[in-house]
Image (cartoon, rainbow, N blue to C red; front, side, top):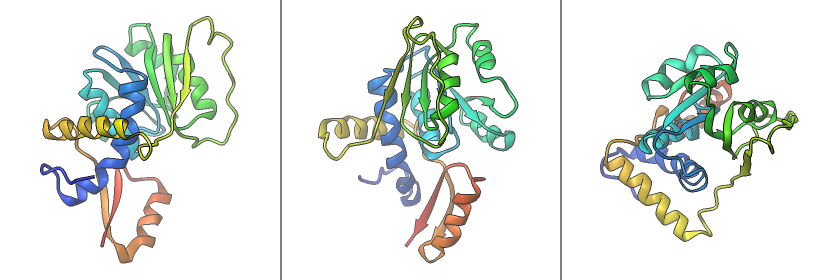
Length: 215
């Protein structure tokens, strides 16, 4: 993908994979639009951060789920409401943020018990787009999924074979960058020779955004 003129080379390196991953689940599958509330777990990941900017670009409200308060301030500065999952009741806080209605959309990178929680937090007719498996634990399937007409759908990025999807995604992200609505978050940069140190940062999971290696 080309480097948008509005971004540095480092920012462009951090842009495409995360934002193209988040595009189809939010724009084309869930059809997020004005007034929607979207729950985003693993929100401090590069894809989670991309989802926040895309949801805001669609004039909807992103609600970032993060385990601790350590990353909450940055998520707030990026324009998301924040639920700290180790301290707060996700379902209760979601209903408080939506005047009791629940969220219409959830964007799930975790699965396991977290997916069960997201289903409980959805409004009737809501949808979960599940794209990651960070949890290795089983999910308990709520008995009222059918009664509340909820949808659970999986997603896997496959732009290589769907050229029309790639074209639409590229245009959406490029236009968002040009408008100043989309900008990648770069946590840190390392020279390529320090790749091991970069991996150590990733394993500590204290960063927010992309780690970029510079040749």
